[in-house]
Length: 242
Image (cartoon, rainbow, N blue to C red; front, top):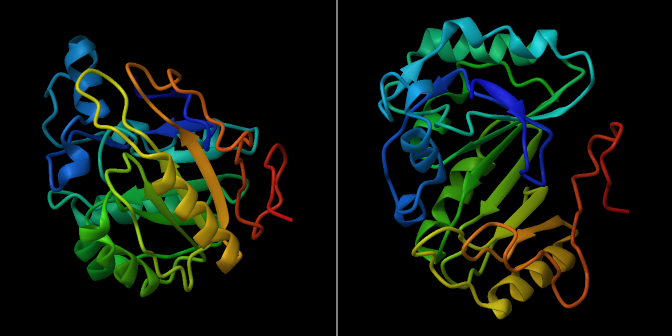
């Protein structure tokens, strides 16, 4: 569970130098990471408590094939218990492996911006915030103020319609919730976000409709699979928006 290839459509691998988290907004209600922690208890000796794993720091250096790497799929890199020195070590690894693209996603927009000046933002680090409903669009304003070269939004699980200001944003991901008790997603919510992206020349990626499992509803929107990525990087195996 430390790292692996992944079924997440917009990335190639996951890397978890920390694990564990706590809920901060409605998108966290049915946290898949917490569910995995409970299912694979033997791999998480501290359960879902925030835990650093120094032994995992060098993993990306051993991956020779250039990959998109989702950082902390089982945690949040800007968690309030993350020590600054360990965070800087994580960033140093990303800085030293320019063959990879690192996708950092957070719900902790305030700490993200607070610590951004203490970190080295090389071009291969993509930074995103989760925006699950209109109440949390203010996270986008915090993201815009960071030095990250590629900035993205994860609107998953999408819990309502969004009116987005996409100035300075390079990529938007949408997706419905999956698993038991999954909350519904409306097609018109996704259509609207797609249209906003097209109007703003922002790459759009629709990950899933969700349901009892992530693949239940498929991925097509109006007969099209939206697999766009930012144009900033043209690395192997990445389809770019033209």
